[in-house]
Image (cartoon, rainbow over all chains, first blue to last red):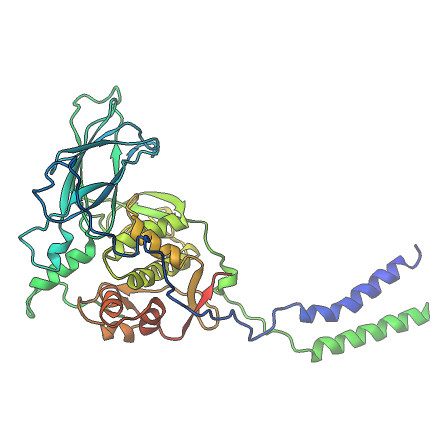
Amino acid sequence: MKWLKVVLVLTFLVLMPIQAYAAPSKGKTLPEVKYEPGKRQTNSPLNNQPKVTPGPDIPGKDKFDIWSNLEVQVIDGRTKQPLRNADVVLAETGYRTVTDDRGFTKPFPAPVIRDPRFEAPLGRLHGQLTLIAYKDGYRDTVYFNVRMRQNMMTRVQMWMLQITPEDRRMEAYVYFYPTHHIFVDQLVHKFRTKDQQGAKTEELD
Amino acid sequence: MRKLVYLISALLTVTLFVQIFTPTQKIQAQTAKKIWDQPYPATIRVAVRESRPGGEPDPRGRILYVMSIPFESYIRNVLPNEWLPSWHPESLKAGAMAIKMFGWFHAYNPIEQDNQLFHVDNTVNFQVYRDGTDIPRTNAAFDEIRTLAYIEKDDDLVELFYRAGYPNQANYQYKNAQKMSQNGSHFLADKQNYNMLQILQFYYEGRKLIQIP
């Protein structure tokens, strides 16, 4: 016990020089990894999906030429919880379906309608559909301008708002699906003349 | 007792010499910016700005509220709003990487505005974020680069900037400005057969691809 203090002091003193090595060594950096795009499975969503042909149960199957799959999820707009047994209707074809326990419908064929007002490639973005959702205790919900994408599955999340005692007029909740800002950018770029006033080139500072 | 004092003095002297002649790291006052000082964020605080009904959120609009959301959920709900989901997979992956590194940087560099503390907002001030807009194709692009990061050669974590650029060209002016062109990334992947790393190297020089530590 008499020597304990001395031993402790000596241990401390001996360890002092070692602290110099405790710091990370200079010049060592994380190794670079080799990137290989790799092969993905044929059913990967990144690959173009096989052509969708509507079955006999799809209304308007002969009315439109291009089809793609659409999946809708319905959630409570306040709690963000999925809503089961909500009726979902695609207004363009009249196709009706219901949501499961996770609030999802089964993927179903929906038309990709090209807007004749826009030429390619701008027109490719426009396959805008109208979705309606119904559920007891909730306000009817209409989503306009739902953008269908060709060769891939489109997924849309619809919000429904529960009816509360404060609600007096039970009118539908409407949402306009936003336009992609790259599309807007391409649209204004296409029609801007060289001497046009406006944003012109971006600042690249 | 005298011997012990001599011994301690000798040891102190030796220690002093060791301290003096052993090379040590130079002490610098600096903010932590290495990737190992800033681990992969779990969440990010997004400020939601007001918009006119039916319109886009206004980049100069009032902040309505700030929400904290999982970082990966943030990336998944930005990618389809910043890159066109129909674009080439390698372009989408380059976009996912840029969005991730931009968000990662800002998750460690918060901003205070109008008495609100946040990392990013939901407009083109930062990256366009819309809740519930992720789709399978862009999610798959993010999944393929989920464990990777693109940083400086000396491991500094920096934000990757990008702008729309002009369609159907590589946008060389963006390469010179060290910013990625979104339209250009699709052009390089689709027309020039560039992969994700080649696109990133084209626009951002002196960086490297690593596994997230």
